[in-house]
Amino acid sequence: MLAEYISKAIEKAEYKKVEEDNAWFASVPGFEGAWGHGSTIEECRKDLMEVVEEWLLIKIQNHEDLPRVKGIELNIKQTLPS
Image (cartoon, rainbow, N blue to C red; front, side, top):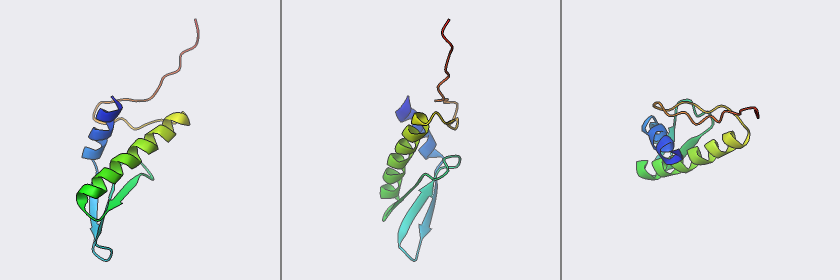
């Protein structure tokens, strides 16, 4: 499910070519602070995928809310013992 979540998040990515650096930058709306870069759009996409995965793991470790992506919810609900 994590791979599908990341894949669907990357589908929402916004890419920007920076002519001065001849590089690509990308981010995913709702994933504040997670951005990728590369000399080609494909390198940028791969970097963004790795960054989003690391971003998610940190959020999960810190018990922070995760954005819902195309119907996929990864937030962990804690239940009280019965």
